[in-house]
Length: 120
Image (cartoon, rainbow, N blue to C red; front, side):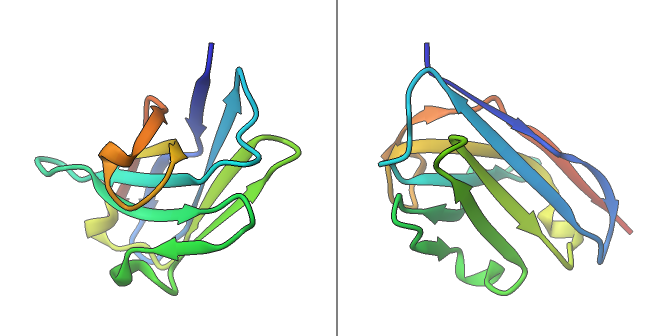
């Protein structure tokens, strides 16, 4: 059974940082694109960042310079480092895998999500 499990969410003050991790099991995603999406309260799920199996990364334009996606193919994990957090970064953050793109429908595998809350 394929599972994606996110961790690292929590409560942080504006300007602070959070590091999210996603551990995949059940199969290797070393040749797959992996991504992070988020869902702010009352809004649709939105693209945050994606990274190909070769390490090429893509970000939502508004997040470039603050967020960094990385992966460890040997450990079957993907991470999201979030710096200079703003109130509008609050939401549930989801890990996704296979096949790729910036739309939720482009991914077959999803984690259950982890809550990230930024306070003033």
